[in-house]
Length: 213
Image 1 (cartoon, rainbow, N blue to C red):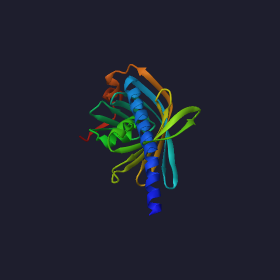
Image 2: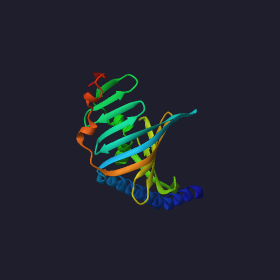
Image 3: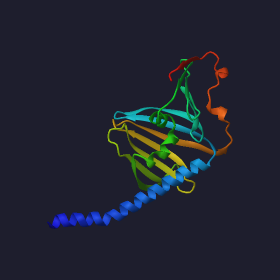
Image 4: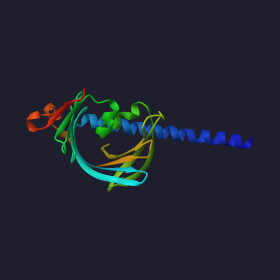
């Protein structure tokens, strides 16, 4: 009985701390999302490394331009345009373009900044430790999926304390695989025309176009 009462007391004492950390995490995520929305046109260089239970599967570098929901993503293997509705994916090795209407989950896999809004639905969140990442003070925020059946299980964000810019994103899948994205350069306030986010066939005259819609 005493052990049971002691457990209840511990739970009651730690609950306010947990609630406070959860509120702080939400505030951090709200400010990060707001900073991104106010940034206008954004361009970021990044590295991404994929892992499974056996270790690293390889590393790649890329560049992404964003304006609202629109993005242009470039890596050594693919170029993807998304205008808010339609996605064009150019495979450099095959000289082939696939046209599709991506799902929300597919967009999360393509555009790491889409992950910034997941906390609003289907995820619990908490504030982790404060640390330095590549010499910059950051706050760690951990998001955990509430739906145990979905593939995406956990996201870890490092956000700069002063400007609320994400500098590191780790995405963990339920099968144990994960991807780590490090932002190496981040520019805001760019004026990006809507045409930047639309595939231009004239630039790829020999590409085979496959419409998957």
